[in-house]
Every structure is written in C-alpha cells, then in structure tokens.
Image (cartoon, rainbow over all chains, first blue to last red; front, side):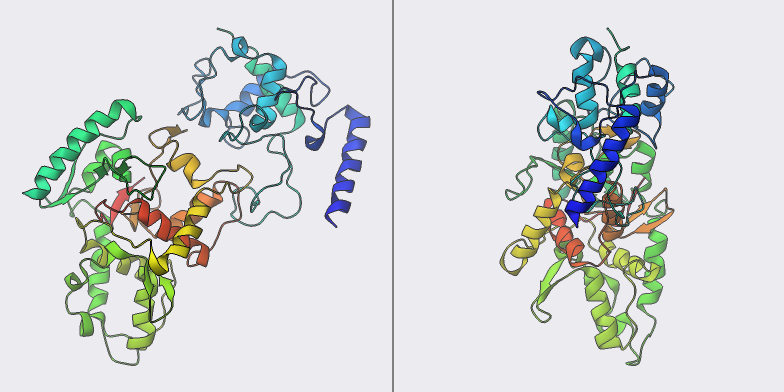
Length: 157
Length: 283
C-alpha cells in the first residue's frame, strides 16, 4: 500500500519534472547539505521571497530569525541566528540546502524542514490538531524555496 | 522570615542569571503581601538533566501581567476560585453531599496540589487532580463526572490549588510513578508534527528567547490552571498541552488521555521545588 502510494508520488513527480523541471522533495540531491540546482528549474524572485519570509501562514522565517532589512515584519524572533549578511556566509547552494532541509546541514537542528514530505511523528492537518489525511505537501513549494533563497542572496553585509 | 530570606536569595540569583540566560525578568513574587512564591531556583532536581535552574513562567511575562498576580483582587483567575468555593458547599448527587460534607473548608486541601499527579494504590493507576475530583463526585457524591475542561472542573482545580500557594511542588517520580514518568520524558523529547518540534526544543533549549512575539518560558505547570489573558478564562494543564502539540502541526492528544497524564507527571516533576502559584496569569 505504502509502496504503491510512493510509486504514485514518484510518477506524479516525474510528470512534474517533464513539465517544469521541478525536483520533488524526495529527489533533492544534498551534497554536504547544499543543493546546487534550482528546485523549480526557474530563478527565484526576491520580492516574492520577502513575502514568504515575513508572512505567518507561509515561511514565517522571522518567527525565529531577525532581518534588519525587513523592519515591517514585527516581532522578529531570536531562536536562530540573525540573517543579516547571510549571503556573505553561505553561497546559493548552501542557502538552498538549509532552507529546504536544514537538518542536512546542521544535524538535529530545531529548524523545520521546509521542503520535505516526511516521515513525521503524528503529522497533523496544518494547525487544526487533527490527523493529516494522506501525504502532506511540503511546507513551502519548490518555487517558494527559490524565492526565499533569492531574497537571502540580497542580504550582503 | 525563612521564606523572605529565601525570596531575596532568589532575587539575587535571578539577577545574576539574567546576563547568562537570555532574559527572564528579575523580580520576586509575593501574593497579597503575605504568600512568598518561589518562582526561581538555581538547582533543578537531579533527575532533570536538561535544566540547571528553574523559572516559573511568571518571569517571562511583562511587568503589568506579573503585577496582576500579586493581589487576588487584581487576579481574574480568582473569580473561578470564588465560583468553585460556592460550589464546594453545594449538595450535588444522589448521596446528598457537598465537598464540604467530608472535607470541611477548602483549606483542608492544602498540600494536595503539590503532589499531583499522584499514583492511586486503590485505583491502580496514575491520577491527576481532575481524576480525584471526579472520583469523589461519582463514587462518594453520586454526582455526574465533570468533563476535563468544563468550567466547573477547571474552577475546582483552581480552588484546590490556590490553598497550596507558596508550598513547593513535590511530585513523586519513583516507585509506581516511574513508568509514567519515563513515558512522559520520552514524549517531552519527541519531535512531533510537520514542524518536528519537541517540548524541549522550545522550553528547555530556548527559554528566554522569542518565537515572534512569544517569550518562551520553561513550560512549568506549577501555576496551572492559568488565567490566560488571550482566552479570558482559566485553562487546564492538558488544554495547554493540546495547544502546544497542535502548534507543531501535529495530531494532538486528548485532555485526559493516558499520554497527557504521563506527560503531566514528567512536566510537573520538572517544577519540583517551585511553589504552587495557581491560579496564575499568563498571556
């Protein structure tokens, strides 16, 4: 059953690849945590990335990371490191890998994996507290990841 | 006298801790000018490996919220206590009894909350305060059981807890409690949900830090039930657990479930040594 579901997903993903050169979450190639190729096959849009980063229902990255260049995002958190100057510390592939699945770069990090579909322990249906029905989509889409990475690349010291 | 000396020691320790440990507020809590509350210790119990000191959630709230808890007339949670105090004397059920019929004044319950949850030899299971209340209602009063989060139940737990204010939490972790404690500990470090967050990620590794506007506390439950300003009502321990697990994008457990009872045993033990503070006030 599980295997069939997985096969179905792979086929769906394969169909997606043909159409848009998008990489499915399970097919992302991490090299020392970094991901060289665009997940969507397209370039990221930094303005869209800024929205994903600051919007609660999307990435909400500022919940844990401070970004001085984004004063409109209120109540920036301090769980993770400040993202000021992050483009000077990581290259694009490194940032793509961290945004997609930070656990590939930092073993055991608290940071959620934004481009992953599981396995999870007691996965829920968003914030309803109810059990998820079927496989969950990743927290962010391939293009949203690319948009976030494009914005982060503008954060030079 | 002894308490006052302890409170001032705590103040000094808290002050010293500020620089090293993010920023729990440097403040001391005395309720009604007469009940000193231990809201900080510099020695967590030895079986709690992840904590070197303990802070009540009171330290992580703003000054005005902290002040509300210093006087019962300013504490909206005391309205629930008063409602339960009236209920305490009301006959309910087929046996024609009120709580007061057997227990006299609510003050006779002093110390009870410090040991909750407590293993019941008679029942052969771990029991929370809610379960002891319902045991009385159904087996001795002939009354209907209250739901876990019914206002009457939450108010009654607030009343019974309030008469233990100032007494140190002292939940048993060994003997028959051990398997429950172990299960709760396992849960505390399990990364639930699509966000893969454990209790420890926020409340052990990051207390004092902020997730957006939320100032993370140690998740101590010595102040439960708490009056939450955002809900404008008292909230049970399990109701708070449910909300936390939900916020990890997980399928939660139910209030009163075996999982949450075990988690309560473990989390309560992380606060052993802090004073009972219920009903406390939080965001």
